[in-house]
Image (cartoon, rainbow, N blue to C red):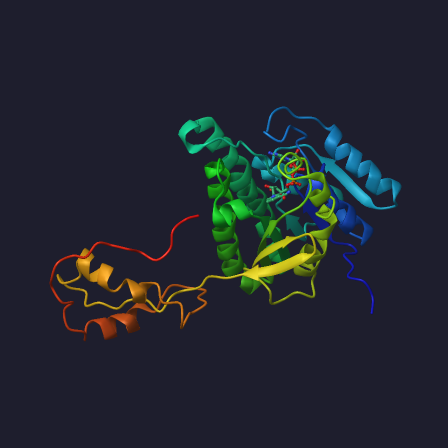
Length: 318
Ligand code: NAI
């Protein structure tokens, strides 16, 4: 058995001046890849810029005998980042969309600037980098993309509406890239990591952070972007501290009502047990089969009329 290698492949890692990005860059270089270490070098709130962050990582990789070049553009200028790979290495094989910032603020105090900057870096930035790499991926019938979501996007988190929206956006973005890429051996997956970095340094205690090394995120990413992975695409993974798991959608059995004027709020409220019935779940990768469901619902009698009951629901947010 030999280790997974990435010889002669070009890997672009965005936001590779620190945290997770640095761990990816150092790893891929150690396994033979040519790495573009992209980093704008600003603060975790997206203020300022500096060449230092990327340069330090490139120097570290070179000192260890690896091959890397720096790029200091913002991911919003993805064309220039991919161009750095083409110019220096003549190709692009793997894109790790990792760069990120935070602008945490309660929704009540959210400003357009906080919303726009987060979406520009995470959503537009990931799009620009992937869009620039896409023609190369298609042409060579090989491409691997990792996008970076967050638990905040999957589940919500106080003070992070902007970040949550952008991060769940990475999931939809990945699902569609996976579908459009499958014909060209372009594989796209999305991770929700948890790791010690300057982003999490202030929100978790040091004794916990010590077990959440960015290096513990890298192996999953390596497996997913390696050429030996030709099937796992469109996956959503939670990863950190030694735990790796896959997430998927679950659809309840659902209520079926005749689509006519009897379909009132009261009819829904009375059928809530069925809406919420997860005893025969589906794990869908697409919309429900509406044609077949319609066939059944049209055959039903109208929902019984009557007083609309008070809606009780099933779960409360805790
Ligand atoms: P980090 O702050 O250590 O690293 C992010 C890097 O991205 C920084 O070096 C920064 O300079 C760079 N960057 C920021 N804006 C950029 C831009 N416009 N263009 C190029 N580079 C830019 O943070 P960390 O923790 O390593 O985060 C990496 C990714 O993982 C981010 O997308 C973050 O949202 C995500 N994430 C991290 C979690 C964690 O537990 N650390 C949890 C969930 C998601």
